[in-house]
Image (tube, rainbow over all chains, first blue to last red; front, side, top):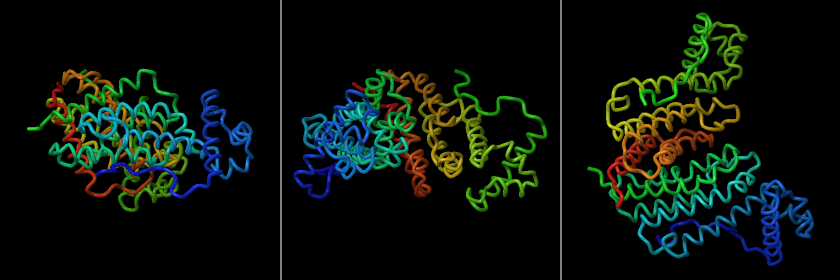
Length: 206
Length: 206
């Protein structure tokens, strides 16, 4: 219960120079994305701009999609840190209802901000199966719903359904390879989510 | 408001013999699926068993996936008929809350029953973009949520999120090409859905 979310990250120890190269490559890739979008990041262009050999980039990421996968994991790791150890209500120390509302808002922003990178992280343009980041949501919801003690028939399955309600609309964009959602989508989804959570917590069924 | 769901089906008039062939082919395909699963249905085997030329099957369905697409549309049409014109609470005449609960239960069964066919209906093994059947859910939810007058911040977006809550977990199975969900998944999803809807309708936020 004290570590509700499965830690992401690199399981084996990484040599100091390998780590330095990785961080450098990711930082440069972020610069390139900010300047020219995900389309501007190729293995060759990344190696050249980072001043490293192509072999280094290849060994590190394997494929072009691997670059974006690594970027996405870094972002997911950062997001997870806020949920595990950040200030409430996103982090620990608030009630389950407030944490769910805060998580939904932050998660929607995270998914929208990383939509292009997430799409580029898969060779076929869609994520097959739930990425680690989705499992995080599910695990977090399971813990919060159990903690809330709402007298639900089946908190486990409701966690699955709430995760789908939160992430499904944006994973749909990702899977379809359509452009970014309209600028107002984020605030609207956050409002809908807040409605859903507040009513879920306050609606005692007969 | 009196026809909340977009009608599916064949827009242009169909000649009597063409219709007879289509219905015969679909009936035979259903028999084959019942006996040997979707894997047993090929263009050749279907033509032979139906006693029709391969050219007829080809003109009708185009590809093997087209056979399953046609089957899925027939099933979706039948399902839609129950929602539009069947007895309450799935059909008209009950309150929005009861209709949403009934729709969820029926829809979960529909998705589980048609999981293999839906998967076979796409050449690449997953449905790109929402099929017509998904749009039906969204439209239906929009109408019911508006009708319910719950004072929601944004009933339109909540309809999107509820459709994802209901269908996302099963469309995930479909997209991943994994086997059927465990036998208890249907009742559990229906229970979770009922919890969600009942609390949504009874939980007036502060």
